[in-house]
Structure formats: C-alpha cells, structure tokens
Image 1: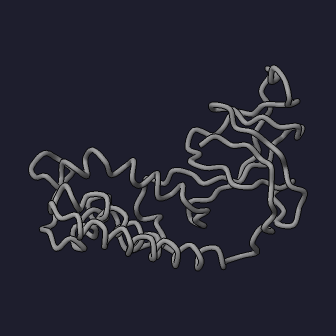
Image 2: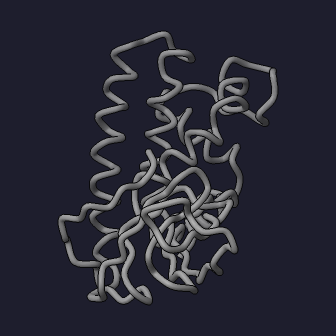
Length: 195
C-alpha cells in the first residue's frame, strides 16, 4: 500500500497546509519555509521513521560475521546496515515467538553471542515518499508542521497545538500499524542499544 505523496516537496506542502501557509515549489532559498525544509526535512523524516517499527520501513536481512572479535563480553560482531535507523527487539531467525537474542550496539557494530549469520530485523531509512504508508504521511505532516511552526508563523500556541495533534496521530498510526501481522511478544529485556 502506498501513501498519498510522491515527493518531499508534496510532503512539505501537506505540513504547510496545517499551518495555513502557501505551498512551496522546491527546497531552495526562495522563502523561510523552503529554507527550513531544505535544512531540516531529512532529519525530521529519519527521526519520525525511527520512532516506530513501521511496516513499510521494516526490512529483514542476515548479517555476515566480521573477522575481528569484540575485545570482551561478546563472542561475535556484525556491521550494522548503513540504512538502519533503529534495531528493535530481535528473535532467533526472526520468529515472532522465537528465542530473544541479546545484543549490544557499539558505534556501527552489533555485538552478540549469536553465531553467524545474524538474523536482523530493522527500521530502515526510506527516502522515496511513494513508499510512505497513508497513516505515516498524515502523522509525519503534523510532525513536520509542529517542527517548523514557530519559525514560519512565529506563533508558539500554533506549534504547541500541532505537537499535540502530531502525538495523537502518531499514537493512532502506530497502533494500526502494529495491529498488522503477528506482533512480537512484549517481554521485559535487558538489551543495551545505542541511543
């Protein structure tokens, strides 16, 4: 299922519509809004993607082991994929009810005692807006609008109202997105990951 936007500019214009501001044609220097999106769009997109295990942004892979071993504590290390934004809970072979894999992220490496290959499920960076799911588009537009509201409109009250709307949209979209498929069991883990 694809979303309702085809470009980053269309996505930005949905956010500007929440602010009742004129649309832009490009991420250039022609207006305050276009400059803001030029400088902040990608960072806000990645942050919003990393907040949830969005179905459209989740991918599966097997990582080969690296030749060097961790200096201590773990038996193996694997290189984190360059497009990985977040590594959620992992299970053996990715099975929803499978054995929970303990791991630690240090820099760009995943340390674990799991022998190769390492089955990894992760949230990836999605740069093509045509891949965004409709509920993601709705929530992300509000998230962007909240981010740029004060700079573009100068109104703190508008920014606060949009932050609240963005939070509600995120909660709703996340619960619908999570409801698809078989969810992983909710288990209290002692897994250390980077923040």
